[in-house]
Length: 520
Image 1 (cartoon, helix red, strand yellow):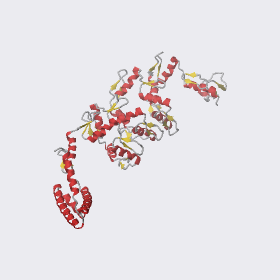
Image 2 (cartoon, one colour):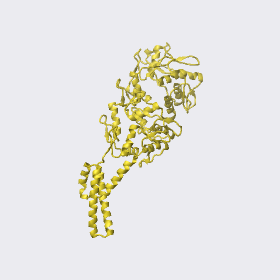
Image 3 (cartoon, helix red, strand yellow):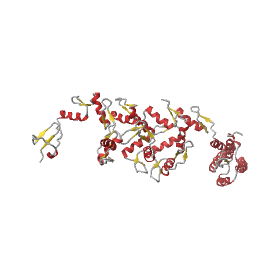
Image 4 (cartoon, helix red, strand yellow):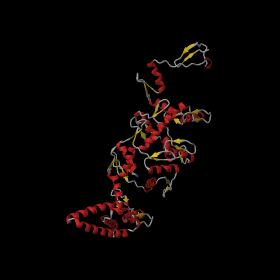
């Protein structure tokens, strides 16, 4: 007998049972007795009772009704009792008579058992015609194929967003309802779905029970492990239709496609900056709130992102195994060494499309491009001054706090910025690592070298907007602007004992640079 037959036979038996009308007043007793009996005994008793009832009904009705009326009445009675019997059968718990021999799980129908067995034997008879991925159920294949076809049949009635699966739509609707009924008893964070709370709790317990058999890496979630394993198999089944770039997961493809569409649906409520994905928005908002949820257990330093914490931990437990062949400097990561080598090779692969200035790192280019766009998203809460980067804001805030965490080991002088300390220490060491390739003059700071190079190139980047005269240095331009503003330079007052004065000195004399007053 083929697999569908047991399901068909069970359906026929149920239809026969429903067609047999027992007495209404015996509903409760029938339900209780049916739970104690086997299917075959129950069927036999029901059949005998029903035959007797039908005979009695026909005898009584034949005495007072005509043949046509009799047929109509019997039909009505059977329909009424059919509904009653159906209700009783719906209340009766299903008898799970089919047991899996491998995991002892029980099923009501043999067809359900046959489907379940495919989990154990790995049978996947349904194959995707697009990427050859296989499934053990036809419904799973149908859902998967929507990834390739782009079909999203389930649409939210409130915002119009569409989904591949009905479960995804139901989960999305919770966003509109605003319900977060599941609360973490560790940190009081709330979640709309119990599964999200369950996953979140693993963050507190640090339970990592899913291990990769290839490299031994362990993961909190099974889904993370499956995603990771595709790195070893090389399977990248999701292809972008615009640029043919491939991805491991559908989520990665969806995120990538927003580059082509320019879609940025997630907006910051503080500065109106928009993002393609919700996760970068959450990370960005921590800049405004000051939240740093990831803390180093060794030194107590906190970070906005877990990746920053992981990178920081290498300082405590990581060896600097990557060494530069040119200068012997060592690095924690190969990526850091690669970036450093550009100092020696003078390679600057990242160029600005507006002014064509080149940079050694992509992050430096991104930071530079904000100069052209005028975006200054980081604001100081003390003085409302704005900055292009979070690092610039952090440095500025030390002016208000008075913090100078960087101390010179030679003279104990302290600085707000590590760069200033490094430049200062070169005074003690005499190091001048930045050399001019035109005249071989050396400098302690790259900014000094860049300024010096303008002498050779003839570049005068600072221009007066009044008379269009150009200057080499910003300080020279500021000094020149006083000609137009008629601003008198601020007087520098020096005590007479602090300077050497010539014999012909008068009590009040003025130079072009400052005014000297005679002070008793």
